[in-house]
Structure formats: C-alpha cells, structure tokens
Image (spheres, rainbow, N blue to C red):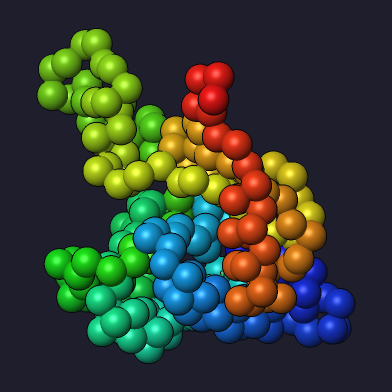
Length: 217
Ligand code: FPP
C-alpha cells in the first residue's frame, strides 16, 4: 500500500491525511476483490522497518488500523470474510491488539474471501522465526514443507500475483518465502488512487501471464 505520503505531499497535506485516503482506497479494493471472486488478498500495512518513522505518524497509522477493525473489518466478517493478520502483533498498542484479536476470533470459521493484513511484518523475520520454532522442537534438518507449515500463511496458497503501487520496483521484505513463483506487477498508481478499475487492470494483466512453474508449458 505504497504512495500514501506522496499522495498527501502532492496536495500539500500532512502524511497522515495520505494514510486516511489509503484506508478509503483499501475499502474500495477489498470490495472490488470480493465482487470479482478473489479468494485471498494480503495488504502490507506496516513493516518491521516502519518503526523508524516519526512516532506521530506511527500513532496515526495504528489509530486508523483500530478504527478500521471496529468498522470495516467487522463488516467483512459479517459478509463471511475470514480476516487474519500476519506479523508480530505483540509490539502494537494494546488497544489495537485487542481490536484485531476480537475480529480474528469472530471471523475464524468464515468461508469467504480471506483478508490478510500484514502489521509489524517482515519476510526475513517470518523465516527466522519459523526456523527457530522448528529448532526448538529438536529437529535438526528441515525441508520446504516444514518451513511452509511454520510461517504465518501456513495452509494457505502462495500469492498468484504481488502488486506494488507507487512506481517503486522492489519487494521490501514482503512474503519472501511465499513469492517464489508469484507474478510481480509494479504500478505507478499511488495507493490512495487505487480503485475498482485498478483491480480490473491487475486481473487483466495477470490473465496475460504464462505461468510455467519451471515446466515448459
Ligand atoms: C506506505 O506508504 C504506507 C504505510 C507504511 C502505511 C499504510 C497504512 C495505512 C493505509 C493505514 C491503516 C491500515 C489499515 C490496514 C487500515 P508511504 O507512507 O511509505 O508512502 P510514501 O512512500 O509515498 O511516503
């Protein structure tokens, strides 16, 4: 969800206004994904590196996350979505953790689209945590399946496509294990400008790709 700050700067607004607009875009994108039958969508909302930002911005982001949980995420759960979070939530403000845990619990048996939100998430941290978890159980040799079973997305499909907005062309520690065969799409659109048309574009770009998974087909 990159480009909130630049979107605000272009309008001479404070960065937090960009994040607020980012939340409005998120609502449109989730709705469009659900309408188009997307089965799972993960949003990178806060990385392990984002703690380096000014405290005021961090506080504004978590306030938005909390408000989002209490209003929008609740609606998604009512619409049969399973809402989940990946990342180390223990460092988030207690009130945010409580709001997220409540939502996760209430939608855990839902069978519709999975809305996954990455918060205090880092791909390297995820892999290291998984390896440490495996080592603790006394196992000294691991295989790919074992690692896949011990990361946040255990039991869930790897992403078919990873989209980065705002013209940046890098992965920035996102789903490093899961992206092995994901299609990558870099869009110039700033996150707050994402909408239903952007989702149509992503789906049409994806449908042009020929995924071979190392095979010749
Ligand atoms: C990246 O853009 C955006 C973030 C680090 C924060 C995203 C958070 C939200 C949209 C608010 C709440 C989240 C949820 C899930 C409700 P940037 O700030 O790095 O933009 P820039 O690169 O243009 O400065």
